[in-house]
Structure formats: C-alpha cells, structure tokens
Length: 416
Image: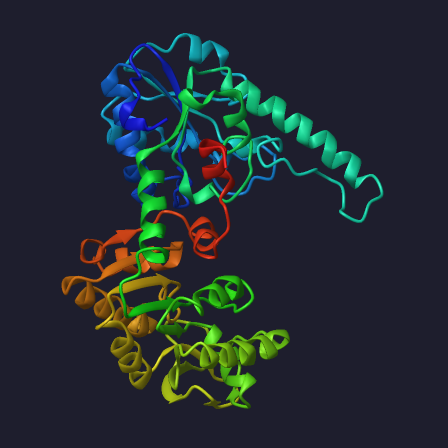
C-alpha cells in the first residue's frame, strides 16, 4: 500500500519512527533533525482523522530500563513539532489502556522499545559459544514474535518510517509487518524518500560520480568501498582511514589511528581501484597534533611521514585541494564520514573543504547525498543543510543499501 492512497480516518495507526535523537546531560534534545524528518507521515495520519501511535528506540539499553534513555524526555519536543499534545505510555508492551483511550486526531508515544530485549531479538546473558545458545536464540525468536504481535494489536495499520533502523530485523521494524495484510502496511514518506535517494545514487548515476568515505576504520566501510569501486569515477578515502593506507605503503604515521590487521585490505583496495579505472584520492598531507585535543600544538606534514608522538587529526591543505578537485565537477556525489576530528573546531578544515566543494557542485546541478551521523552533523555544524540535495537520516541502513543489501524493514513492507 502507498501512504498517499491510504485514508487513516477512524483508524489507529502505529508508526515506527526513528526518534533516537541526541540528548544533553539534562535530557534536552540537542538536534531535532530526526523528529522533523518524521513529521510529513505523522501529520498525514492526524490530518486524515486517524489516531497516531508512535514507537521508537533510543540508545542501547540492551533490554534493561534506563531512565536516561526514556523517551519521556522528548515528549515536549514531539508535541511542539506536531502541534498536538502528545500522550505517553510508560510501558510499550502494556499500553492497552492508553491506546484504548486514544481518539482520532490524538497522538501517543510509546516508551523505548529496546527496554525489552525482544525488540532486537538477541538472547540475553548467554554467550554465543554456550552449547545452549541455539536453544536460547530459538526461544527469543518466539518471544520476539509475541512482542511484535502485541505492538501490532494496538493498531489497524502499520507504517514503517524509520530508515535508520531498516537494516535490522527487529520486532518493530520488520516482524510486526507479518501481522498486517498488504493493504494495511506501508512505508512512510521519509522511508520512500530515503529509498528513492539511494536509488538515485546507484541506479540513475550521472557522471562523474564521486564518493567520499571518511571515518576512522577501513573495516567498517570495506563492503561499501568494494561495492563503490564498480560504480564511481572518483573515490575519496579520508579521516582515520588515511593512516592505515599510508602505513600499508610503508609510511610513518606516528601515533595516528591505524588498523594494523587491515594493511593488506588497504593495498587490495588500491589495486582494485586501479583495475576499475577509479581515481582513488588519498590524503597526501595532514594536520598533525601532539595530543588528541582541540588545544594541541599542530603542524602540517606529509601523511606518510608523521613524527613520533604526533597524530594526524585532519586533512592538510594539499589534500583539501585534491578533494575539492575530485568533487566540484561531479554530477553525483555521496558523502559518508568526516575528513578529520570535526568535533574539535581546530580540525574541521578538511570536512569544511569537502562540504564547500559539494555545495558548489550541487549549485551547478549535481545530486548530492549526505548520509551517516557524522557527515550530517558536519553539514549541520556548517549551516549548509540547504546547500545539498538530500540528507539521509540513516547511517548503517544507508551504507547497507548502497552496499546492495536488501533492507529487512523495506522487504517486510514490499513482501520481497
């Protein structure tokens, strides 16, 4: 079912949203991007005259109730964004009374789904090596189904609108869909946009196609890097990965972050890039610091010749120019991961150079997709969200989709 064609009048709709928003030490929301992203779907339910039930996770409580991860802290933000006084159910698996009292045009937020281990469906308190693990796993799968069935019992229809968790087969993202027929389950507007944006990058490629992969580890990005090598014209690898590549080629990297067990993987990526005719852009110089601190002493030095006791924390001026050259004439751009420790204001230069070049290319007609928490945080920090084509709310989900994997949260709706 398509959400546009569905009339929610007189129906209770349970919507899986991604309200895993950052909070400060006082429980105040510091970034409302994910709440704003869900609004078109949530407002459609209410405008039609439906009753809205929202469910989400927050953080990683691992099946235990943790006050600091309670969604009660964000009720005021969701109420203000929706323009409706949102009610709260303090136990997501025992919300029958709150659901029964819900009238058309009203909204209810359920407590953190992950306070129940059944949401993720992983056995608790037992090691994978334990002989009884398989038995425990089987039992948990049955408990997960029962949990999903309970959530489903609250509503007449189900809307999946949490792209950030679509790559997980959790009770609320995929299993629940089994309890609704094809005419009563659908993707929300945000999910539809996300799926279309990924499709734009991978299926409707306008060339040149430049992908920028940042972050600290090669290991977490290797699947996507290998998939992209068959698609892109330019591949920029930056951030902490820089130093694994530098060391793999015999460079000296001082105290820089490095995955010593991935040096052969780095060399293999370089080989494959050459075989595929991909222009692989790696850092040639860096801003090194004598401590992991915003106030550290700094010097610009070659990325493959960093003095002992120093570590690379940002891309250097030569590297920034090379990045910009590979980006500014591109017609399709994907950015995931910063070029340095952007949380420190003195080490944002590389990430800012990437953002500026993406904005320039987008202004000339390129399609630019920004995805992954840190890249989104970068764009927001620079106040440049309106200068790119699309900002994805999903980190891991976006990467898996681009890697070519089927997302359980999408497959459960589409029946794939």
